Length: 395
Image (cartoon, rainbow, N blue to C red; front, side, top):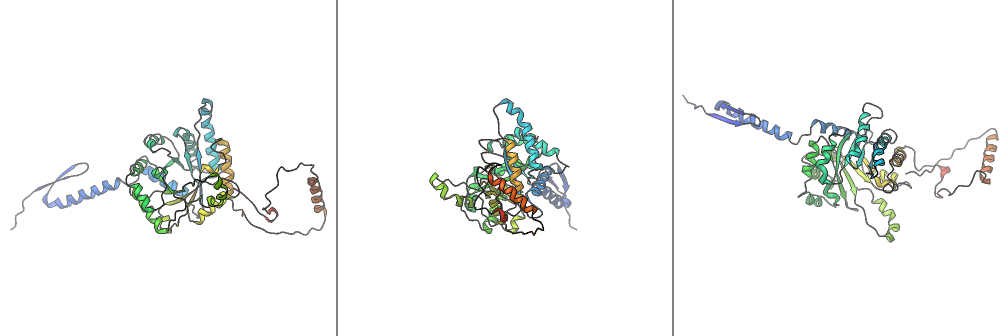
């Protein structure tokens, strides 16, 4: 008969130590490896708070009806006057309510100090369970050196679901190879990990070189590279921004139309990649003349999920950061962008009246207006608009 010598096998686990006989040694080693794999898996798994943030942002960035979602950028001022500093909290609260109830934003990107952001987060969180419900807030980090302190403060602020990081300090990239080269020595992976540990979602912003071309294959490789940079998890969304072109004053007027065409990023987005992460396109064009409508239509045609409406769209926002004016602008602009009213249509309607009384009343009113009794307009309408045919020019 064969004799088996009894040996002990010591297996060190993450939390304790087991001593077993050789007959169960294989099973113990298998159990240890399984537990070690689970521990490693937990290191890249989102916390429950981060999963909640992912769910809320994913719902905000994607429309069930495949319509373009709209996300304005708010720059909160830091007043030096003590009185203005005391009044800022109430102004931010009013702005938050306007963005939620009147502008009906899908999500809000906010730049400023965490202290300035806190009243907005509270107003949004207090609206949970109401209609309209809260709008997710994404904090725009302007200085990567302040990430650690900002995350500590953000953990005490309700309503914030994500942090937008401008990859490589906003440096423009024109190819996947250029991205991989920049990502070699960056600390972005650690920054994304810290954001996830804080229970929030990192949202990368990539600045693309104007005029650069991105095929479906390039976009798929780029998204895979961003996933690796973020630590192996797909971000809930990626913001794509076109780099700004620097033109001289003489060339500004001649290249105005070209700049409008290059104001939105041009990507060929494959459907398979769009299911993994939401594609958000930045819009920096000035409001007026239908430019914002044109830009949003362009990125919608390019199959972006949402539009990031930058603060540059607000006329004079840097010179006059009045939050009441900002709220009113976004209410009007986003209402126009979401309107189903056609911006270019024409029709003729004729009604035969049995009596001439309405026509006589019309002629009477026309004579009064032509006489100037009600005052003359300071400027006439755009001669290219056919208002009688139904032409309409918006934001």
